[in-house]
Amino acid sequence: MNLKNEIRLIFCICFSFAVCTVVSAGWISGSDPAPVFRYYAEPGEQATTAGKDQILDKLNLEFHAAITEGDTAKSRKLLYSILKNLREENNNNLTTSNSQYYIGVYNLLSGKNSDAINWLNLSSSIRDQMKCDDEIHAKCLFNLGIAYSNLGDFRKMEQYILKSLEIEKKLYGESSSLLVNGYSALVNAYFGLNEYNKAIAFGNKALGLIGEVKKYNNYERQYFIQILVPVIPVCRTIQKR
Image (tube, rainbow, N blue to C red; front, side):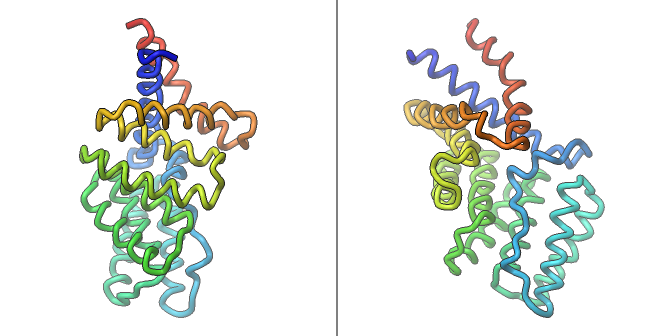
């Protein structure tokens, strides 16, 4: 593949990543919220403890459900309840980290990137201290990268996406389709940094995983169809130029 075709590849991957980012925010305007799951880790069971923590854990579950259902009014109400609980309890545990993560995602999808960075950093810090490299930690770091990308800081984006990928490789394996988002995000970061050789390398890695469509489950296959179908006309336009 010559350099011209490789640059076309980068444009295609970057566009697919951009489509993913825009679609993921669709719940705010009431459209299909399903793609949010690519940003949004499912709530786990590791933080269910007694007393007040159980209340916060229940609020987290309801907050997650409200966001993914596109219920903005309920999401806002639950946000205030979670913030009140965090102020009163002031705990540093996984339940608190989960709350901070969900609040960070809420702000990210609402376009409040600086607020998202603050909350996601708080969540990541607790998990770092507890040496907890789980799905939420990986998604937290990924979303920090997205927030910095939205602010035009592609170097910070690169740093956080690489950290996210390190955890995801441990969780899912280096050939998992779940790594495609991270590799595609790195293409976007390196393109923004004018580091085209790195963009090409990670673009090829992303395409390699996308090429294994036959191994995907139905949800993943539907997800990539949603992203890649709009990319085809753009790729053809680039090829004509």
